[in-house]
Image (cartoon, rainbow, N blue to C red; front, top):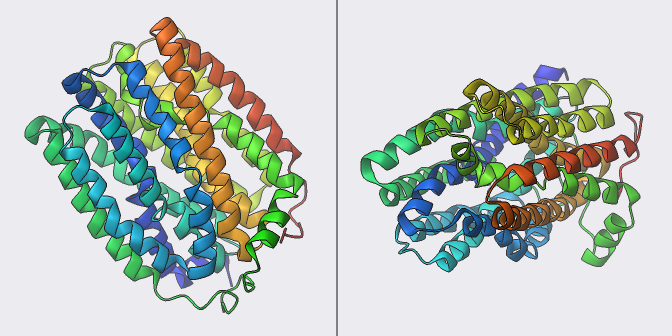
Length: 406
C-alpha cells in the first residue's frame, strides 16, 4: 500500500485520535494560560503561587502508567469513555471556585488524570496499530488538532471571558470537550481483543505486568528517552500555564498576549508537520535532536532585553516548533523502538517522565520568581537544559532497521 493510501484506508481511527487529542490535555495547555491572568487578578494569587500548579504533575504520576497499561489490555474505547464522561466535571468545578488555591490545585490534578484517558496516551495506540509507512504523518495530523483549534479558540476564549466572565466560559469549554470526546469514542470503533489484531502492525497477547515492565526498564534505549525528554521538557509550565503571565511581563496587554498565543500555536502546527514528514524520510535520531533543541534559542530571546512584539512573536514561534514536534516524537519513538504489545505501557512510563519534568520545572519557576520576581533566570536555565537534553537523542540507533524491544 502506498504512503497516502495508508492514510485514506485508516481515516476513521485517524479522525478519532485527532478529535480526542485536539480536545483534551494538549488543548488545555493553550486554554490554561488564557484563564490564568483573570484568575490571578480576581483571586489575588501571586505569580509565584500560581506557578506551583506544576506540582500537580507529581500527584498524577502513579496514574499514568496504569492508564497506559489498561489501554494495552482493555482497548482504547473502554479507557477513553471513562475520561470523556468525567472530564467536564472538572470544568464545572473551575466555574464554582471561590478563591481557595488548594481547590484549584485539586481540580487541576483531576483534569490531568481524566484528561490523560482521552489524550495521546490512549488514542495514539490507534495510530501505532494501523500505520506503518505514514506513521509520522499520521501522528502529525493527530497532534496538529489541538494547535489548529487553539488558533481560533485562544483569542475567542479571551473575548468570551470579557463578554460573559471566566466562570461561564469554563462551562462552555466543558460542554465543547464533552461533545467532541463522545464523537471520538464512537469513531474509534470496537477493537479486537489484545493479541488478535488484524491490522498491519503485529500485536501479541499481553504478558504479566512484571515481565513487561522488566523488559522496558532493562532497556538502555528507554533510559536515553527518559533523560532526554526530562531535560527538554522542564520548560513545559512556561507554555502550559505561565505563557500569558510571562508575555505580560514583557509589556504586552492581555489581548496582545492572547494573539501571541496564536502565533505560538501556528509554530506548533509547522513543527508537527515538518517533524512528522521528516521522521518518515530521514534519520530518527537527527530529526529528534534538532526538533527538541529549537526552543533553546526562543527562550534565550525571551530572556533578553529585546521586548518588541516581532521579537517576542518569533521567539514563541520557535518554542511552538518544538512543542509541536514533541507530541509527535514521544509517540513515534515508542512505536518505533517498542512492540505494539507494550506500546501503552511504555508510553505511560514516558508520559510519567514528562509530567515529572513539568512538575520540576514548575517548582523551579516558582523559586526563581520568589528570588528575583522575574521569569528571566528560569528562561536561561531552561535553554541550557534543552541543549543538553536534545544532544542525548543523538545516542539513539543510527539505522532505520531496529529489532523492536519486547
